[in-house]
Length: 458
Ligand SMILES: NC(=O)c1ccc[n+]([C@@H]2O[C@H](COP(=O)([O-])OP(=O)(O)OC[C@H]3O[C@@H](n4cnc5c(N)ncnc54)[C@H](O)[C@@H]3O)[C@@H](O)[C@H]2O)c1
Image 1: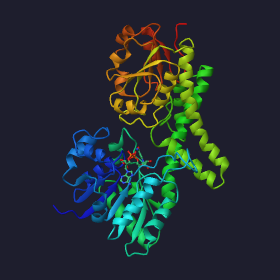
Image 2: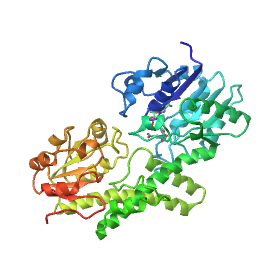
Image 3: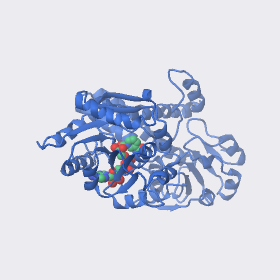
Image 4: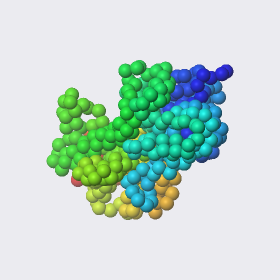
């Protein structure tokens, strides 16, 4: 079959794989190739065991792979043969030199730009899918168009707003698609070509366009606002615990104000994931660069509250369990940073597990999708840790359970059975407020929710 558009995506990760699978599915007349420097990842995309878990992803890949969706390590060939190139390589926080711990590390991004330049023989539209600091497109344009050769490049910004755990649904029915471009003639032509792809399945009124810097900034601000909401309710959860108010009741009352809204107002042990912290740090760094220190301090506060929430959680465990965790066996229910993903990047569970091990606790980790990643995250941790997928087997002989991820299966566990096989007094620390606390208390547990008074027998 001949395809009427050839699209390349560089970076076959959590964003590149699912977004390209969706485009391939919705646009059967296009040929999509996804390339990566990581050959193992590409092998996994070409196998029955995909490198990431997302509900609905397997079905999408099965329907498209080998037809109009291809995974390959041939980056040079991919660049040569395709006219639209999405770039979704990783942009982690810089860990060295100027801006270490704050700024985005753009080495993978720039390496990609140089590869595009090296192998291009015809004009290309290059699309930023990765999340980047404002004005990265300018640097990209300078690298690509600065050699004086005849090949012409247009750079667009098309940040990805999908959330892990609901990526396929988010990609299928996005709240909005944002396309930023230069607002000159060439820029508008390139913008149109990208909009045309999304028009295959996204209603026109959900596809918004803007200047390229607004587009780049909107993604950072979007994540900053989402994280800010979590930190806002978590900050209030600390006050609730101190005053015997109940954070769920407060959230309900506050969220019914239509100006505030009820979504994303669930108190928890804290936010994780590869994006929120890194993107806020990136925003903070940008603000400081422009001399906006008060603005930077404001956003940095969102991260401080998150760090404090995780530290408070371990302090609560320590205090509740008679100020010593040494030798005590604690089961972490969940290790992924949220439900419906196996991704553990920046998961609060990493921090909590390390803290517990620093207190010489013995940690048992359970998760339906994330045990492989958990073992990598904790490979250097000092202490005793084991990995057991079955939650009942994991809880057996433990002094305490701490819920780290809001997997649905944990809501439905038989807590009478679990109580019987745990040591007494048995503790539950519900870091996601998903359990029926009164029922667990009635069974015999001492229960510590987030943001409401504990239910204890002492
Ligand atoms: N994960 C999310 O939920 C999410 C959501 C929206 C936006 N983003 C942004 O999208 C970007 C990618 O995120 P991700 O979670 O998919 O990252 P990821 O680490 O899962 O995937 C990135 C991939 O890029 C590959 N890569 C790096 N340099 C390369 C090069 N020079 N050539 C070819 N491949 C290369 C890596 O090997 C890796 O497989 C980041 O900027 C992130 O902030 C992520």
